[in-house]
Each structure stands twice: as structure tokens, then as C-alpha cells.
Length: 132
Image (cartoon, rainbow, N blue to C red; front, side):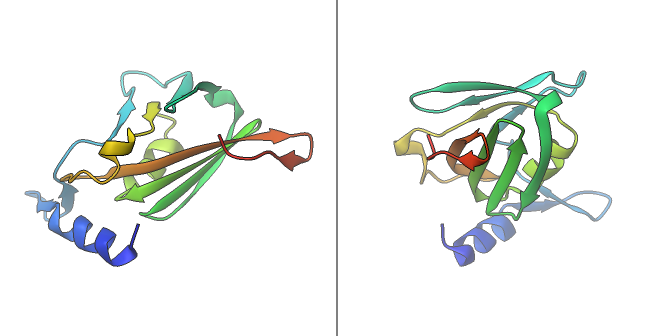
């Protein structure tokens, strides 16, 4: 996704709150469990589902356009716009469900953060395999 389009998208979707800080206008395209710490992350791809325990979570890094999350057995690569909040949610281990969008939904207009692609790579003994 073009970085200029992402920045324009993020600026256009911010609303001012009473405390003067910006907030994204719409819901996040991932599900959170804020009532208690989620025990695991369910990654729902178009052709496969992964259940990854948070006890195997190592770290997350990235930008507003791309986030990489590392677990001991798998790496996740998430692309889209406005993904800065996803990094914070990974740090809090509150993400319960991360869903790959249908091909027709990847370019749909959204008022908030948007996930356009999710890749899962299995980590073999000392090497990474091809993405799923």
C-alpha cells in the first residue's frame, strides 16, 4: 500500500477528543479481549486458522503500515494502514482474533485502521518456511 495514501487516510480519519489528543474514528479491524488478558491469538486466514498462545509471544515491531509479531514457532506479518494501535495491543497481549480480509475487502474504504494482508510463517529448526 502506498505510504502517501496511508498517511492521507490516517489524517482524514482522526477526530479530536476533548483532551486535545487525536483518536481514530472507527473500530479496529481486529478483536480485543480487554476484560482479562487473552490466553492466545487466533489468526484466521482465508484457507487456514492458527491458534498461537501468548505464552509463546516474543515481540512485535513495525510502523503504521506494517507490523511484525514474533512467536517462538511462527512469525506474523500484517500490512495495512493505521496499524500503530495494533503494536500497542500486541504489547498488552489483548488481541484475541486477527482476521485476514477477503480479497474483495482489501481495498474497501475504512474510517479507521485497516488490515490489507496477513502472512504467517512457520519457523522451522533454525530457518523460516514460506508464508502461508
